[in-house]
Image 1 (cartoon, rainbow, N blue to C red):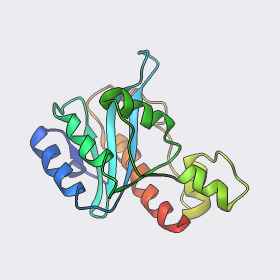
Image 2: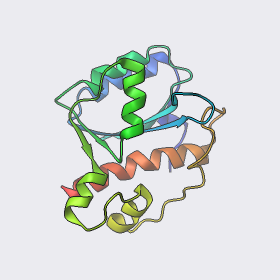
Image 3: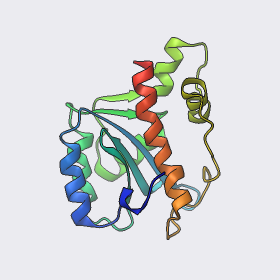
Image 4: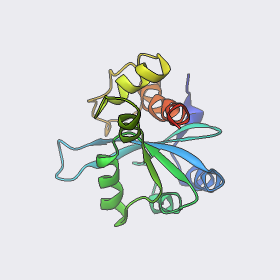
Length: 169
């Protein structure tokens, strides 16, 4: 489903991507990180879904990651997350500020159903009737290279997150 063109792993591509995101009204965001080897979670992969597609940013190869604040702090862009506590913690530790204008699909879904704290996997199944492959849920995302299967796993999260938002809305 996804390929190398969906992986951003250099500063030039990252800068262009951030610029294109500033034209978006709605993006979906997810992170892959490791927490068991460090006191604070270490961001390893950042996934962003836009109206043009889903993209993974290899944060190990990007030296200008603070450019991401242009998106995170922009009130004109709705940031869709699912249960973003850990994602927000990562952004706060990296940038010293919290993302603005966020939408949590887990909380939103609890308002329209009796299912509180629903997992992302179950939410995708309930709303989109798609069974996600969760093979890499507990994977060590600090390891490289990233395989095509890992990229698909990671990007499916933001790909379906956008679809879920529009269904809930």
